[in-house]
Length: 170
Image (tube, rainbow, N blue to C red; front, side, top):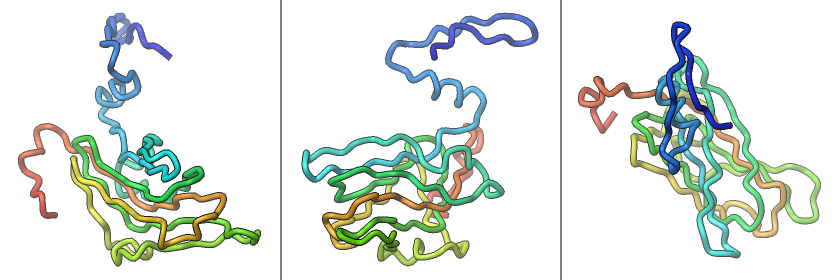
């Protein structure tokens, strides 16, 4: 989808976007609905990070906090959740769902990070430019299938006027 104009009070306003700027991000910034934290996976077979887009989509305040499950693909050895925008992400719990080799039951592994062990209102907090990386190699069997991230949390958008008032060590 390419947006060419926006109608405001019955008047068309041209939306000339630079070619290297994502249309969705521009729209969300204008509406101040945020963009959520980003999920990246490390592909051990090909030795590179792959950006899977955002997680906790549309959970831009505490009232909307809930679980989200995302497929991670194959040959994954690490995941990273990073906050790139002027937002604060609150992660209440994270686990990895997977199927063990030769077993048909879904298993759940919890990373050894105390604040992420269960949904308990104790949050791991990420500010803009911060990230958390989780190594899966010691957490799940190497030949696991149907590997998914299960995350619970939300984020809050920091309005430009309020950025200077937010302490970094919340």
